[in-house]
Length: 319
Image (cartoon, rainbow, N blue to C red; front, side, top):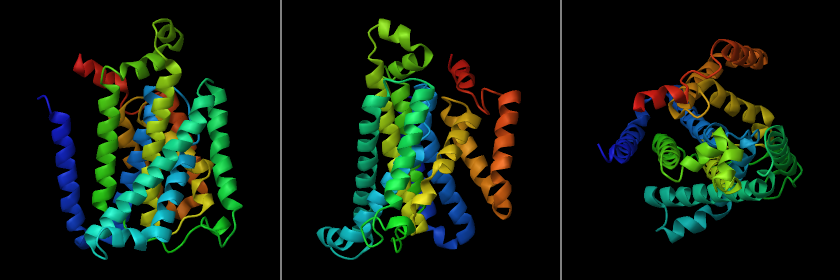
């Protein structure tokens, strides 16, 4: 079927809208877990474009998430009332339009940061790139932490009183858009350049592939969706602080990509669901969470280093 991807996207959007309208009948605890799963799917799929499909190794995805979270939150906190008047005053449609603008601002700010970081650093490879992105993550966290408490970023205490605009439709609608965008790009003629960069960068350059451009495009696209996820996260929790976007958050996202299977969209989605639910089960044993995650990662690397659902599995099926 020629348009099966577009049809699947529309079906997911329709289903998300239906569940969102009926969400009042869902227990708040389980709804919160489902929304957390959706946000983690966006983060994992977007990082998979960089780490899995393009073969780079970024450790700073939480930094782009923080940029999106703070950018979107500042728009709704500082400009929410003005934007609502522009879109027709108080009401669900005006709130939705305001939230959409806030998310796009947060995503655009994260994409801009991705471009600023990516252009000079993506000429590096391997461990060097990982160190640069990790440094970016820490720079964002420290800068936010050292702003004035009465300023727009709220200092070390962060931002509070953010409107709870995030719902099932926004989360899973954007998750579906992220999956569709990444899949469409990678499986297109243009997207073969990402795979060329991953498989053999030197051979790709010898064939005329501009590897730096492809790496920057992947980095900016992944950063944009990380920013959207950050905006959704902020308007779900209603309170954010710099410590919520530290290295451990980036580590969680990297683990999802590795366990799911580098370059496997289905695999990272499954891993995002499993690890989010597992994290909830370990809530009462927070001090042991990282031990469990680390052991799980070690066991997976020994038993199944290609991940839960490796990309090669789906390529064989399509062949």
